[in-house]
Length: 357
Image (cartoon, rainbow, N blue to C red):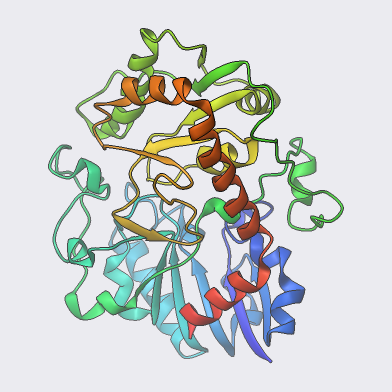
């Protein structure tokens, strides 16, 4: 029995990206891996392990936050990694940032595997000073917040696809009940999927507000702004406006024919998977430039891709509403594939065993 230990994000210990490791702990053991999550780097359980996965946001109060990163906390992280190399057979760094770029390349030489939720197909992008968000490259001011330090070419082979937020827990919990997320089995409390072909009185829903800073660091809101501006003049039955309570949000989404999901801090958003669960057709900027797991983003098969500049958004939305049957089949396929993925423990375990070894 090999041991896989995870130094997890303390702040989100009850409901974070490590959810599938809690959920499928028994299945991991059946596949020869003893998995456990820990929230202190001094925990003795991290010593003498076969695989040590380090969630990058364990350091979010210091080094992981680019605004607070300095020589002192950099040295602390380096010292920790050097020490753990003596105690673990393999060190796996999980860069949990939302973007396909990374601020964590300065430590890649100290780890055996460098995981990301999503990885660019063209890894040469990582070998130059580029924007964290490839769709904004050369558009934002070149500041330390937006630009990452290059990855040495010799280290590129360490960059692998980890797992994305599609495997998070999307069951409905009240605030206090959310602490049960990692421990309440899906047979007792399953994900509630809505039938795609149910009556849907709303054409689309998109909650959010226009961000006024369109040129500075918040240019990440540009796509969202374009969606909201498009909805200003639409004749479609659209629910828009400021964010609402979770229960109301889900009700609107489950009654919407389609869901527009622009990029945010990264390409992949919670809204993507909420759309699959709700049976709403997912419409979002193209994902063809990246690799991810689980990959439920199959153009014209599980979602409708858009150009990054969203220049044909209005026409596409109107076309979808005019041909409901054609696009309903895509929504059904998206929901079907996503449902298969989140109930396939073996596929996830095989993926993890492959990338950590």
